[in-house]
Amino acid sequence: MSINSVRIPSKMLNKVSFGHKMIIDIGASDPRGTVKLLSTTDNDSVLFNNNGFLSNKNFESEKDFIDTVSKYIVNACKQAEAKVEELKKAGNPNVSDKDQELSNLAILVPGPVVNNKIALIANIKTSNGQSMQDVETMKIFNALINQAQKEHINISRDINYVVAKDLLGTGISLASILAKHPQYKDKIKQGDFFAVGIMTGGGFGSVNIKAKDQKTVEIEASENSHNLAVPLSIDNSHKPDGEIVRIGKLGATAKGMLENYAKTLGITSNDDINAIVNTGNARMATLINKDGKNSISLNKNLHNHAIKLLLDTGVYKVKEEKDNNITLELKNDTNSLEKHKKARLTAIQKYVDAIAWHTICKITEGANLLILTGPLANGINKTIMDLTENKMQLKDAIFNKINSLVGDDNTINKLRKEYDFDIVCGGEFMIENNTTCAKTLLDKSSVLAGSGKRADWISLPIKTL
Image 1: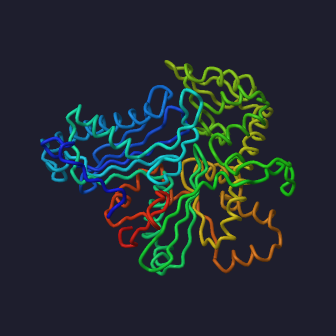
Image 2: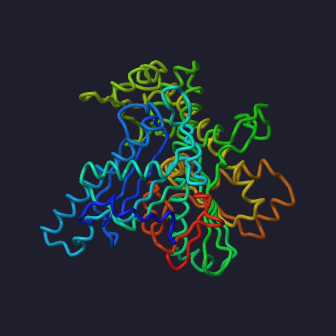
Image 3: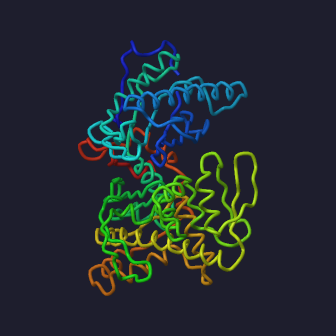
């Protein structure tokens, strides 16, 4: 049986049967819930993509969250139905009547899914300030069915319904790339290969990809961002600053980058730092003084306080104002550029420190490869290459930090050699979001690993990749 397959009682179905696939990647970098959606036909031709928010406000309760998710899906089904009709009328051979039925639905969430419950979504909170937790996946499904009946949306009798941790999507997408990659495909097929996927953005995500034999790849998502670590002093690579924090707070997230950048610019109060963080625009921490790379755009209505703070640092000036948007660019004088450079390098170094801490842990577990993916890591990689005369990459900076931390530790250095450990960043391993895993995740040969209680582990036949 495929993951969470659901057979709907006939009384819950409309008379006409409709059939397309849908995957929704819900994020928690914004309390309204970010969402990326991919809708495809039964043969995996793309119907449409959506990006935005689940809601235009914060969620009042668990029920509000469940109802909002179900309504979002129903509205997407309407959009899919209309698109199918449009393509049919145009004579498109990739669509048919069956594509008007929702047959496969995957919802990826930013938290562990255990025993058919979303155990926790830490950064999406109810009106009383409590994190969303213990959300039953079938409550979402039942709300969807009820909403679909009201809106006359048709759902397959044998719908394949999946709710899983978002990092499974990262892991599946990376495993699919590895299985076709000229350098790694044979290693995957031979088995005994262990890769680690790292997605940094709104949070710090880590997923294990293990080909233990020649038939199956096992993917294990984790909450590694809560592993404890000791921040390092920026001016002394060997000296911890004494504070113990979870690794996700060290700086390998968009939020962490912005916090460290703001503090180094002299923005110190929590409210002011939060104003910078809430822009979500980590590009400001990677800007370099080159044409096309020295400006950022912000919404004046949403981020007016942050705009004022950035201008007050003396580092930025207004380049352009249009409607509700304003473009700030770096000033081209020595003092401003030096101030920005120091803040930028601090943010990047803290990012590198965090990845290095985590990488050492994965080396001791026997990993062969660490893959950094996502727009944030890709942007930092490009910035480091632009900043250095020898075109040093992010992987080189991480290895330099690892070397300074472990020194001549025989075990770690021996494991690196024995497992031929390496790091890759971006390039062909670049993943924009987790919806790219849709085809493989919704394949009927994909099954939950173990007893099936954890929707954070999945087992995939290599042939499906």
